[in-house]
Length: 147
Image (cartoon, rainbow, N blue to C red; front, side):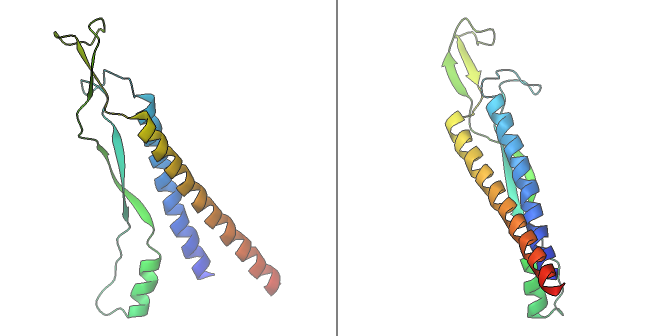
């Protein structure tokens, strides 16, 4: 049963991380044409940085203990960072945010790439939901055998 709890724990960390990733992608898409932001200038695309959770062990741990701890790490969001690529500049002299030369700085959001990222994040989320479902079915089968 301990292995099943570890599996659920790993899947839960991935579900949380992918949910945040989906939220950030949705925000990027929603602001793809926002030429004004609270920070000033156009909206800046954001990216979620995922990292493995840190493993804690000491040198007295056996290899089996380290391997078991490592197998239960999961993933965490270390940061949500702004994309440093320059804004998209479009000539539109009638726009209220146009500079003196008539150019408007639009966000550095590419809707096609965001859609691809959205599909990848959705598939990763769905895969982890399947892990949770399979683990639940195995636990129910184990209980049925034991009962």
